[in-house]
Amino acid sequence: MTAPAAPHVIAIQRFPVKALSAESLERVDLATDAMLPDDRRFALVYGDPGTPGGAPRFATLREEPRLAELAALFEADSGELVLSRRSRPVARGIVTEPIGKTLIDQFLLSFLGSAGRGAARLVEAKDRGHGIGYGDTGGGHVSLLNLASVRDLERVTRAPVDPRRFRANFWIEGLPPWVERGWVDRELALGPVRLRGVEAIERCSVTNVEPETGRVDMNLPLTLRRAFGHLVCGLYCRVLTNGQVAVGDALQAPA
Figure 1: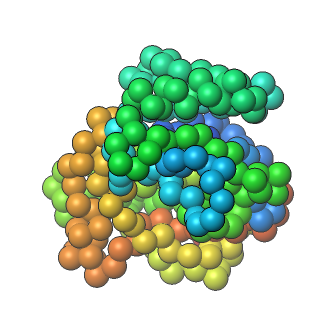
Figure 2: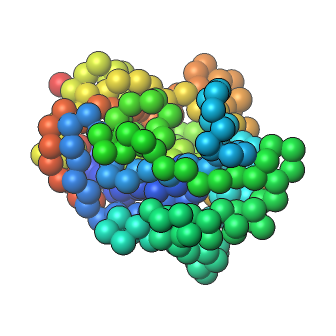
Figure 3: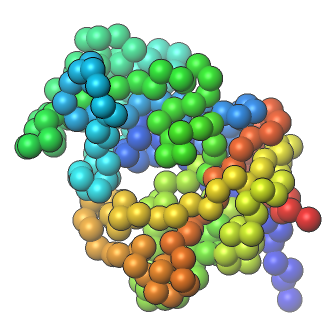
């Protein structure tokens, strides 16, 4: 009988633009108290981002499920952002310069329209120099997804559940389902990098959007609550030490 594989990283995902699809990485350099480099560096905000007062109104998959059709590729050295749809580039611009950002904004207007919320515009995180982008926690955290938990969710839904719905940075294979729920305030490691679990990720209606088509075809928060009594799937972690993590690196679970 083949022994079960030790827990390890099976995929690394970075999201240059919050709400758009991910870049897949083979390896990534992590820094203490920081997100993945350039993860959620940009976001889409309704209306004029320069208008004073109030919090920004982000465009998310909840309001704009069609955003699931767009993949983003960002080259940090040049500042070029390329948006693709169905593997075909549809817009590009040097978004660290005003004219390049305008090109992306014009595409977004034609793709999404403006409706009553106003046009969605690209904005850049002010704290990115400190390793903090537009993450959902407001801090410099990375996220883990246990693929065994996703498969257990599939058992309940009786339908495939694409792990991309959960928009996690690190996909982990080789763990028991739902074990990560007990890792809050405990230390673990990905390869040479030490992490601490800080918050179990409660899921919202964004996960209901099918990543390839943008169709709303499931109600995963309701399924989680009814089947398991919680809304959790995944774990936010704080990076404790600098280092590089690669696909295939071992995960050392809390003792």
